Image 1 (cartoon, rainbow, N blue to C red):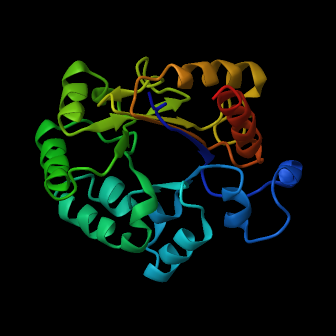
Image 2 (cartoon, rainbow, N blue to C red):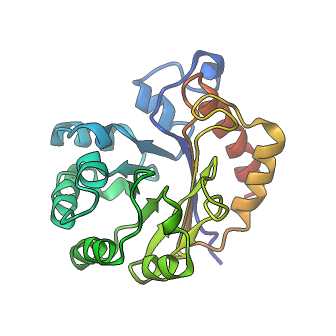
Length: 245
């Protein structure tokens, strides 16, 4: 029986000096990073478009097994607030053609002020799924109205995993929801977001949780990058998870 894949990485591929010895000395930053981790979350796409040549270079610099989680543009999620955003998201996806074989997840992060509106959400996801039936999608909502059985049912219908986030903004936000085929953990740092390291006890517990995940694919991305804690936490988690596989 094949073991479902676990993808572990950080938001971006910066290698902090404190853990530099854990990575090869030679190569570009992405090459060095991808020699150790099997995944990365690309947040720069949230802020600006990239050239096709940039995506092609990323694909070339990484091994065949490496996967990218690519974040949807804020123009769709935060400015348009998903309204009539399906076609815009499909246009964004089409720009990823040079990277497409290595896109492991499309990440849709929603603003804290965006409440769940059934008609808007259903129309948005329906447009995307008609053209992209097999693209793995994770959604990280932040408004409390997204955490209900009805929303989970809708996400499951469109095969969209609700990301588990820490710190959790809702009592259900710390665990994956929606479609059970994809589990996506986004760890922003706690108690201080983007700064705090998680420490060995937390990471060991998280490793056990990932190992028990029933999903077809499980992702864990550390976003506590401001002081470099993300890379150290991801290294520790990788050791705990992969040494037993």
